[in-house]
Structures are given as C-alpha cells and as structure tokens.
Length: 131
Image 1 (cartoon, helix red, strand yellow):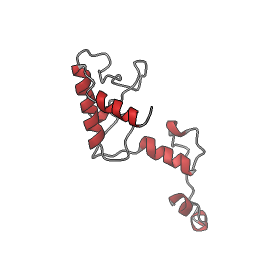
Image 2 (tube, rainbow, N blue to C red; image 1 turned 120 degrees about the horizontal axis):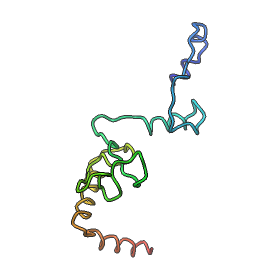
Image 3 (cartoon, rainbow, N blue to C red; image 1 turned 180 degrees about the vertical axis):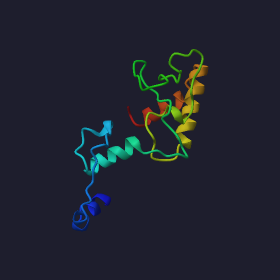
Image 4 (cartoon, helix red, strand yellow; image 1 turned 90 degrees about the vertical axis):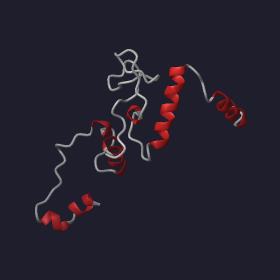
C-alpha cells in the first residue's frame, strides 16, 4: 500500500521517488521486485519477532556453514553439548513457539536417552493412515 501511495501523482509532483537500490535481500533475488511474492519472501526471511526469538542456532547438515547444530541437536565442533530450544529452528515460525519448543525438548530427551518414545504412536498412526 505504501508503494501505491508513493507512486501517486501527488508524490510524483513533489519529486518523491522510491529509491530501493541500496536494499539487497539475498534470499529473495529470484522474485521480481515490488511483487506480492517478493514482499512475502522478505517478510518470511527477514521479519524479526522479539518476544519469541528463534533460528539463532540453526539446525542443519554438517557441511552447512549457516547451521550451529546437527540433526541430533549436537553443537558442531563442541563435544558433549546439545541445544534443545527454539533457537535450533531453521526459520522463524509464524505462530507461537511453545508447542514446537516442547517437541524439540522431547526429541532431545529421546536422543540423549537413546530411546524412541513415540514409536508406538507413530506405528498406530501409520497403520491408521494405511502407509
């Protein structure tokens, strides 16, 4: 909407023009600038929610330079240390972080104890879904 206002005749008469040449959103270069998809990409990758911080210790493959922990929540390069909170999420979630963070903690407990506490539930679900 602000772009539409900025492109009105009134703003043009004042010599006001949007200068976005200094803006660079590397995650969104495959979208045409000023399109809905472009702005959705910017919001998805660059929006920050201060009251539920996430994605500060991203999970990823061992060779991923942007990740801090592996798929078993172990901190890369440091032995005997795991991270089991919302910081391991790869992206900022669009909802409350409570339930996913509980799930991460439960998964960490299973990994540390080397057990699969949801095996029976998963098998029943797969049987129900006929998979």
